[in-house]
Image (cartoon, rainbow, N blue to C red; front, side, top):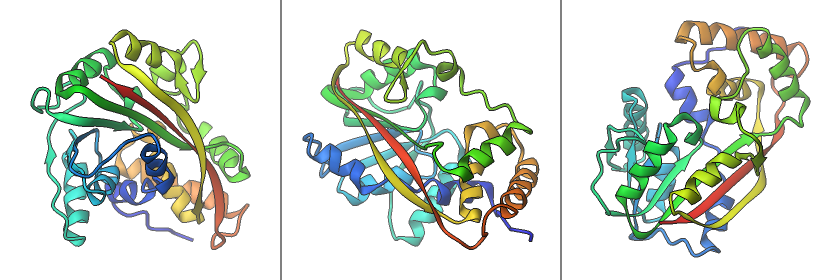
Length: 259
């Protein structure tokens, strides 16, 4: 059976929209208030987190270098009658004003940045006593479909983690210890550092969509990625019912800091 995976950027937007309500609940009990707060999300991608912040009353802006990602975000928001500003920029050079934001957030991308430069930039744009939230989330390797997927991908792509994760001396809650030390050395005060589990339902097609957004496939062009995902879907279809849903355990990690 041939499956149409569609536009790569649109697939990313749909498959990564799995940030659970519990994330915001855990921040609420730790005193984080969104309404009326000036919030900058760095590396906002297709606006998955940005929209959730906007709906909670934050005066949020997304910073994203990819034109495709920003355009997809605007397209999705126009369908929801939302108007959220996006700015061309990077974690190292956001193009945002000094000492302006109450909260700065980075989700699922800290390992991709020049960390010393990103830390300096975040300190620059945050108000005194401002809040920096670094978070990450991913599926765990507990389900057979994930294990079979990784076995398949190992035959075709380099599954080495990004340098900062691969070379780490150790991890705490999934974060390299170097990150925590760097934040502390930059005079961020770590107020809390925690993790929780959550569940996400998939079909084989939505799972393959999710795989298409993984870091390890980011170097492939659209045609190569489409072919690989098609082959993965065929491979998994021989082992699992393509119409049946399955549930994968995920882990969410949050580091809550003050400037």
